[in-house]
Length: 121
Image (cartoon, rainbow, N blue to C red; front, top):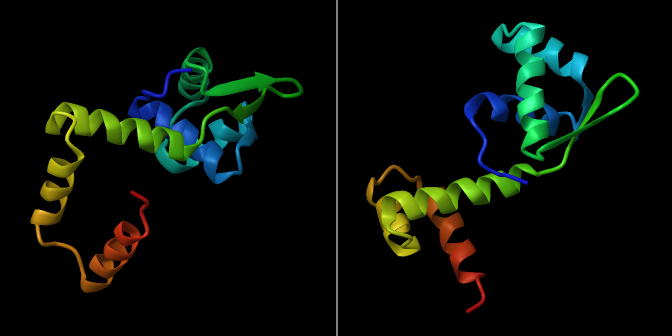
């Protein structure tokens, strides 16, 4: 299973995740046509790519698509890729860069402090 997904693949996965993990290919196509203007063939092509990567399993009836990976798995993978690529694998540098822009509200800072204090060593 490959967790590296392109933007188009993420749109299909996001549609599935929002629906609880299962929709028919036709339902996905209809939603993406309404939301972003994709035609049915585009959606089916992207679904096939997701199947090839092991992100989606398709079965009968009506080409029911089932998400095999979670949003959290993709987020974790993408975060690790970003940290490796931009911060030489250093989580400390990543957090320092994230916190240095000063855009966090006091509430967000308090929540982050609470998360960090809850981590086990």
